[in-house]
Amino acid sequence: MRGRACVALIGLAASASAVADGARFSVLLEAGSTGTRVHVYERVAAKEIVSSRAPDKFPPGVQDLAGQGKAAAAAYIEPLIAWAEGRVPQDEWAATPLRVYATAGARLLDAAAARSLFDDVHAALAARAPFRFRRGD
Image: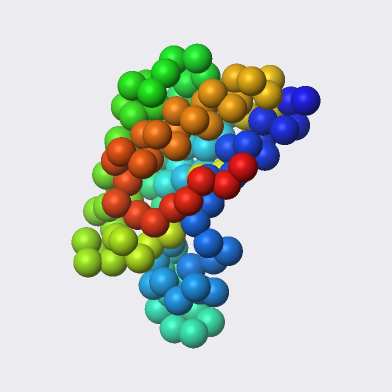
């Protein structure tokens, strides 16, 4: 059942891609076992995309938040969203899709712990993120 933990966290997805839905920017939170990297992609031409990436991972790994509740998830999300906000113009925030991908660390969790973590991260994003995302299960 541990493989399903990965799928649960990947469920926080905006749209198929920034290029496909016409958004100029796209934000990806790559939640790994030792930390999360933030990627911001910008479409500069029809088939040309440039990216910027946070220079360092934001530790700890996402699995370390399991069981710590919504406040811990909110504290974890804050610097990630702040970094992305600094790279996406404010007038584009509402149109910018946000995706969260979690694989390696999430595989360490059982299904119930992954679901709880997923709920906490979703609540933190709903309260803080100015970007466009939807919950997918």
